[in-house]
Amino acid sequence: MESPLGEMLKKPQYIALASMALVALIIFNLPAQTMSRWKLAISGVFLPLFGLAGSSQQLLQKTGNTILPRSVLAREAERLRRENEQLKIELKQTSELLRENAQLRQSLVWQKQSPWKLKMARVIARDPANWWRSIQIDSGTNQGARVNLPVLTPDGLVGRISFVGPNRSQVLLLGDPNLRLGALVQDKDVRENGIIMSSASPLDNNMVDLQYFSRNTAIKPGQSVITSGDGGVFPKGILIGQIVDMRNNTAGLSTEARVKVAANLNSLEEVWVMFP
Amino acid sequence: MNALNPVIILLAAFVAVYFESSFSWFRSLFGAQIDLLPPLMVYASLTSGIITVTVLSIIGGLLFDSLSANPLGVSVLPLFLIGYAIHRFHGLLLREQLYAQFAFGAGASLLTPLFTLLVLLSGDTNPLVGWGNVWQFLVIAISGGLLTPVCFVILDRLSRALNYQPVAQVAFRPDREIKRSRGKL
Image 1 (cartoon, chains in turn orange, green):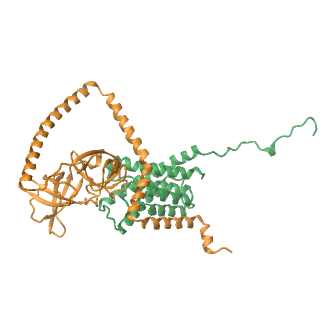
Image 2 (tube, rainbow over the protein chains, first blue to last red; image 1 turned 120 degrees about the vertical axis):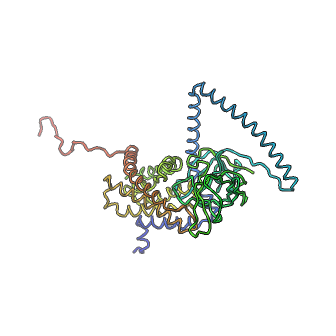
Image 3 (cartoon, rainbow over the protein chains, first blue to last red; image 1 turned 90 degrees about the horizontal axis):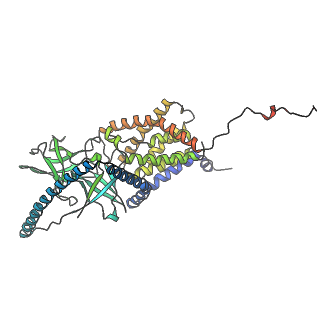
């Protein structure tokens, strides 16, 4: 006669339940590092599809370029030539300012600032879950990326790298609950520090909360918010966005503001990773 | 059900997760990304065995979490619970009816993210939670409900196309055959 356990194990439903309990037990007890490695390995199965999508996008772009009329291309080249000349003039001015800044820093015996390098990366995937704000980019340890490097677009800050694989990384976007950073409201007569937190609404990806201002703060809608440089992850002066409105927090002890992020986080295709 | 069915369902899960992470126009339009795994789970639990349901929840959940900021494995259990519950009563359910497919798809699409959020909140993670989630759940439930009958049509056709069909019955019956002979009876 067979034992009740043996009888149970013959039924597929019990086998399914037992295997699910086992899987849950194993997965939830994995150390964080092992879990990250597993995550990387599992998501590796999507790499051929990401590669295929990237190549087909490039092919489409090339096809689009070949069928563009010559007059449009000439106009675009002329526009770019003018922009290039303007940028060259601005670069000369900026280099002069940088030189002056370095001299002043030296005379004040302040620490020397070295400029950051930028490397472009393509966005290959977005977080499929609705309660996180993250993207995957095609830049990993092989390209020099590492955890906590800032990621931005020409419009402003996007977020920071939170997890790195050999050829891709996960970037936490502004507004993700795991991304908090020091911010500075800088205007002619205002200079106030706050902390960028996640958004109160999961619906609007381009809105974040800026908290911990004093109750009698002088901040106003329309003022620019930049990174404060506190915390050491983000260098000072990267544009985050603009203040939309303010309110007193529930306890009435401090003021918080809603900030519209300068970079459009809904349509990110290419981003820049900042290397020190 | 046939041997290729689980393979087709797992391939569909792979494509579904890729689609969710690569195409965000739905999220830009409605403020929430659709979840294709619950409609697939409804299909699997109504047409396949419990082993397929288990494998789909493990593989689908792990694939989903690998591209998300979710801790690995968080989506496995909610998917399995939904699949198990539907499979347990699949003999009593009107799986051929469109409205039933819509109702199961909508229910599964609503409950799966809800369970996942509960699992996340019971751990030490801190997901983005607010009143906006109510709208997101509504969008996910309706889109999931609408996609479930589509899922049934596509996967049924795919399954039929890729499998041997049973031989069609002909009118010929050997016992009714007229025995012919040369004059002898």
